[in-house]
Image (cartoon, rainbow, N blue to C red):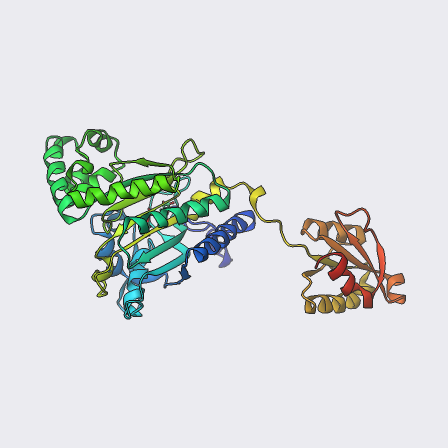
Amino acid sequence: MDENPNNELREKVAPIRGMKDLYGVDFRKYQFIIDVATRIANKFGYQLIETPIVEQTAVFQRSLGDESDVVSKEMYSFVDKGGEDITLRPEGTAGVMRAISSNKLLVNNNNPLKLMYYGPMFRYDRPQKGRYRQFHQIGFEHIGEKSPYTDVVNIALAMDIFKNIGLCGVVVHINTLGGAVSREKYAKALVEYLNKYEQQLSAVSKCRLKKNPLRILDSKEPTDIDICTNAPKIQDFLTPDDKKYFDTVLELLKLWSIDYEVDPKLVRGLDYYTHTTFEFKIPNGSYQDALGGGGRYDGLLKLFGGNDISGVGFALGAERIMMLLNEKILPPLGRKVAVIPVSENEFADVFELMATLLDEQVPTELILTGSNLKKRVEIATKRGCSHLIVIGDDEKKQCNVALTEIDNPKLRNILLSKNKLISFLKEECNF
Ligand code: HAM
């Protein structure tokens, strides 16, 4: 018998496969992306929304489509203690539509409604570089305006975020899925073409040929990709109105000087898209996959019992962006003061000083570990403190402190009376 019941737990200290802890520089990168995205979204008139991480499974099943990879293979679904079939959200759009409907956010026709959200998403995908089972998205939904102008404003919002994050050379890959009439005509032509290759198609694509042929264009199987290279293109099946819509989108992109490439196979992995679809990629980047993607969706809100109102939106993949971000772009860590006693005799003095400094909104850390003053100063420096305030026997007797600014040779061991310290820190050191 195992003598130590903790042994079993010790073996389980690794996180779940495809999930990771976020800390240190990576956390700072994530926070930076969120901060920039929130600031830019605010400039574009968006408000934040947070929906629960779990929803009823039907919320995703019905909106993303049974045939999508996400629903058919990748959902973390389980039955809870009350017998309800629930799923960890694989994406944010469906939950936001559910929330708009549950809370009647569009009841007074106060459209357009522009919502931003961020947080963890879950897909039981095969983990690899840039693909995780828990990852973070920053998403945007713009509901209540169906216009090529709105589509391009959304793309411009994403490009503005990339620019402000310091990512250059992002190209928009764009396509249209047209409206229902165009898609039906196209699906017929596509099936006719794919029927000729039915035997060579992957098992999943064979099945999709009957149920949802457009999804085959999204297959990652090499043989399916080969077969699709010469498949008919949706652009040749658009109704005049749908063609005009897409042509206007492309003209407006040019007007806003946004680089784009039309990609006729860009159907996206989720079923709710209609008309414009797009993804953001960096050519020759260290990682080829999409940094984000989205498109227009008609009828999605109606599915949740809401108004029959069209929307457009996109989500950025935080981990993919973080991989391309250089640490140097991050805002410097805030300045902070270390209060350091020379010996145990001054512990109470620095403790009291810390309370005063914090009360005055000066970021402060108490450095008590380290066997001597030199070690404590090393610890404070390692912790990123910009200023050191040391109290020893002499300082204590004279009610003084010794202040040093680490990167400023002119400010070394300046003796200040405790009364003057706060005003000195604020006026001379910009705290
Ligand atoms: P999506 O293309 O499935 O769209 O995901 C958006 C982005 O999330 C991807 O481009 C990628 O950067 C990131 N991503 C997706 N899966 C993973 C993964 N397993 N690991 C790491 N990153 C990943 C959507 O989710 C739609 N809801 C976007 C949208 C909003 N469409 C309209 N509104």
